[in-house]
Image (tube, rainbow, N blue to C red):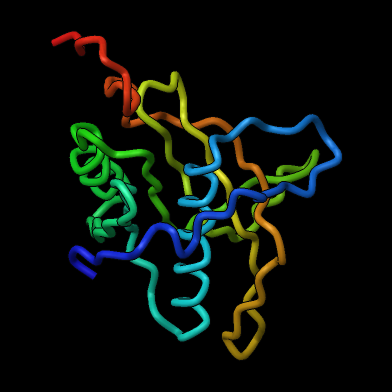
Length: 171
């Protein structure tokens, strides 16, 4: 995948909505759409039988730059993504996507889940959403229709200022 340019306007959806009965989560629209794009890309790869190598998607202007972050251990992939994202001046948002699991219910049952987490410049924390899936006996994946909100996450863009912010960044 190296560095792939994708026209961001193709997947931005100003009407993005969550189907939740709980209190709505406030995720910036550009971030939500980057995260949803990451999940869509990863799920399409899995449906083709491809292995999911953790990857980042960095929204700069109307372009989405994607980069894989392979590693021996999960921490290696997270570290690589953080290095790519934390100094991305001029970026609107980023997503980091990987194959993982979530624990659900009182019994903390583990469920397979594609997870996309990310943030926007200057925000105190990021957000993570996930797409639950099952694999049948023949190895076929079946994905839920809508992502779930996994929770807050670290924001690798915390130290960056928002686009249009004219105040100087602290060194």
